[in-house]
Image (cartoon, rainbow, N blue to C red; front, side):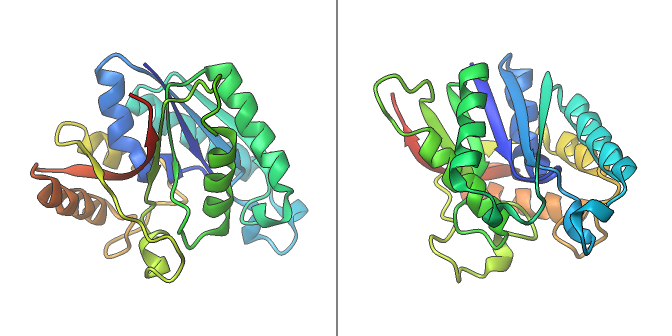
Length: 226
C-alpha cells in the first residue's frame, strides 16, 4: 500500500504518526512524507531575516528522522511558517493535488481540523478538499492525527474536537518514534513538555489503555472506501 503523510511543519509528521509510519514500513508498505511549510521563519520578525543555514539544518533533521523510520522520501515545500492563513487556500490545495497525483496514495495521514496551530488547520482543510471522493479519487482512506503541544492545547475550544476512533498498536515502534523525534534538536523539549520523550511515551501508553494494548497512536478516521 502507498501511504502519504502530509504535515505542516518538520516534526509534525513524527509527533502525529511517527510510530505508525515505522510499523507500516516494517509491514512492507511504501510510506512517504510531504512537509508543506518551512517550519522556522516565524521565529524572526521578518521572514527574510532567517538564516538559510538554519532551514537547511532543519530539513537535514527531518531526513534523519525519516531514515530512522525507514521512510523512502521526504518532500519539502516552502510555504511560510505559521502564516499559511495568508496563503490562498487554493494554492495549498494545488500542492496537495500534485502530491496525490505523483504518489498515488491509497491512504493519507494529516492534521486534525480543530487544532490550535493555524497552519495545521489550513493543511487539514486543503487535504479534505484535495481528497473529495469523486469517481477518480485515488485516496481511499483519510486519517487525521493529533500533534502534541498543539492539538491538546486547543483545550477543545476550536471545533471540531479531536475524537479518535482508530488506534494503531505501536508497542514495537514507539521507541523508533522517540528516537526520530530526538533528531529534531531544535524542536524536542524536556519533560514535562508534551514533546519530551517521557511525554510521548505517556501519550502512547494512555491511548494504549483506551484501545486495549500497551501503546497506541490515535487517529480520527475521516472516511474510508472499503
